[in-house]
Length: 631
Image (tube, rainbow, N blue to C red; front, side, top):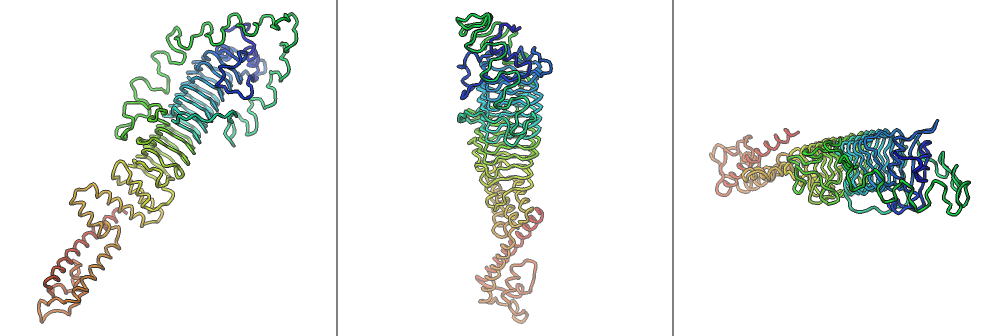
């Protein structure tokens, strides 16, 4: 139990403001919350005091209580595990010396914008409104697995050094992470986002630190209306416009009621040191309070365990936090049998840290989104896992750079996606797997998936932009699964839907040529013969060219040297053209072949024409029937 008489000056100021929901702003111009450990001791607030206010504080009559503090250094652990906080919390631009413990808590609204935290323990957190991590710097893990957020989650321009765990979380509105830097990767496996996810200009798995910007980032994205009801250019009801004094606070230059201005003497006070009766002179520690940097009485030091054996940031023994993987079970994002490419994470292992260069940049397996995933200019260094994701709108990767050389850079197997936009993305450095996915519109350049692909079972309605078959076929040749007939059928169907039958036949011909490589030598010989003569039935003009060439050769040869008749007195007039046709066409009989008998080299020419005629007829019939059956 915290006694009011033992509160410091700033803690009493916060306590007075809490009952009316007023803002206590301790910020100084040009400071960085990451340097909060060096701030003046008069800005230090104990975490146990804030906990007492949130759980036991009351509101003034006719007012709504709220904790709104900016620019404070919160010492000790703010322990709100399993608690229900009935009022909104704003701890913006603050520095936390210890990791807040929010596991299983339920609160109205939480705003930690631009604050510095060692880590965030908030698995299974329930927020009835908006959760704001805009511009935050969290040095360790951000644990929000299984969290339930009724409003939106804002993490624009946040720097979250450790893994960001949002697996199995539910965000009923939008996820805003524009400009997010997460070197440890982002975990969204099994998460549900009711609106859209915004990862524009995000850096995932990148060890590079973003350039320092002293200007605080905007908490609300441009042209968007905050969920607290304020419109762009207006101040939310829970905050105070710039230049105005919050209710219950004292304007700059004035003295709060009941306190004495600097340089003035209050009645009953001793003038030699200027210290009010009952308060501690500057530089000394009040009786019963803990000096800065030491552990408060009754609290547990960061490196020690409380009496129940459970560290403040961990779950009690025998319990598994909802949204996290119980021992002995495989974490989401494991590689299923048959899905592991060379050099990928073997089954039975969880994803590694993305900062190591061989881990997961974005784990969004089985992610469910209400509309779109916008990831323009995304930078991902590691694997992007989207297996089983459901995105009914657009997945936009325009200008994105995905890099995981020698391993899987993008796995979007068994997905359902409305539109996938990668037309202006950089060539992916690594393998792309989209097996068994259904995509309505695929916007993709021919060289975007340059390293290797897995396309078995991929279905799409339209493939844009329209490109020559030779450019599209190059991607199919890079399929790591070898000859996949369905991929060629899909591409041919796309050209056919556009009315380009010639391109569709080219794709079908390429499919048969690719298949020929897998056959034994005798089947390859027969296939090559069909290809050379009639293009497997997809090149009918080639058959006509062969027929004209053979007919011309035979006509010239037999026109210059007429064969002798079999019966001198019973034979029709010799016609070299129809005699050659009689030799070439197995079925048609003009009566020339059985009336004349060539000799010497011309006899061998006749045998060759008959043989070529049968081969030509057979390949034409086989190829034509195959082409008709495919159509």
